[in-house]
Length: 203
Image 1: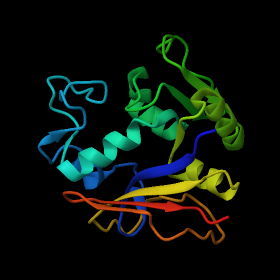
Image 2: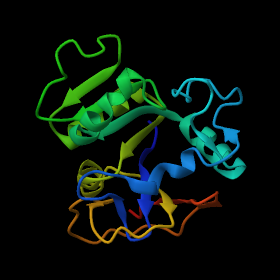
Image 3: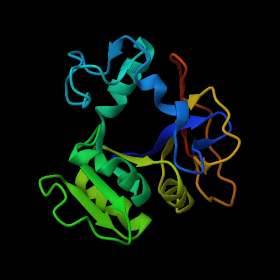
């Protein structure tokens, strides 16, 4: 069974968006470089058309390519699903998406896409693991990610730290209310306007 990795871009003070779900400059690093995440610039990870999206620094490209190649399924909350309309049925990585929501999939929404709606965070991980097989389950940070970490189901925490201070907003770890120890970072990569960090969760 593959790893469960909680991840997101995050401000240096620990926020993934402001109170109105505006990410501000947190995702600017995805388009401020010269290197497309795929070699061709318009491959499976570049959904913007014309090969103009997801162009990052060389260091970030190598890291993101290797990370996304391992992903089999993504777990996300309903808020993010609604904000991005589920990436129109085409997730940036992986073949499957599990959405934690008490509401069902919108009627008629991209029936061809492997999107599954589950009303419990722990059950979402179980479903995502079934779908991902030996590949990684990527969990979007925030309230759902925090619930999954608190349940002891996260193996690693991956943070793309952007040099900005938000002061308030949506926290990377959601409403988590107790201490969790992580190991020393085993990945530390400096990109352009982003620092990629990965920590194993201490058991």
